[in-house]
Figure 1 (cartoon, rainbow, N blue to C red):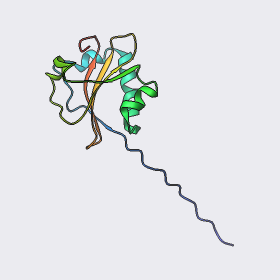
Figure 2 (figure 1 turned 45 degrees about the vertical axis):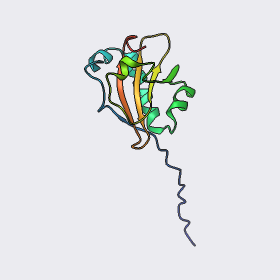
Figure 3 (figure 1 turned 30 degrees about the horizontal axis):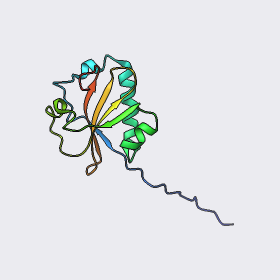
Figure 4 (figure 1 turned 120 degrees about the horizontal axis):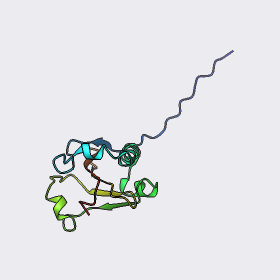
Length: 127
């Protein structure tokens, strides 16, 4: 009588983006202000979870209903914000969640597969 070996199924590895807060603009957008708003923290948690598994944040985050509007920011349109940061690695995105003032700004570095969180916004101070 022979024993059958267990078959291993190999799934393709999903390469998402590792969340990184090392470039967060604490002086301009204090974390303490954001952590008093549970709705913003809930949105941040869902966004963090999605970024770890998504390969195309610009498309997937909005298509999956995680944010109402996801826009790529530009130095010409967002001069005030870009004057506060030094982020040459890649595109910066502005995530809006509907008819509230809560916004999350993050940058994507495709080379290091990191999502740099730059600002948790509780008012309409960026746009």
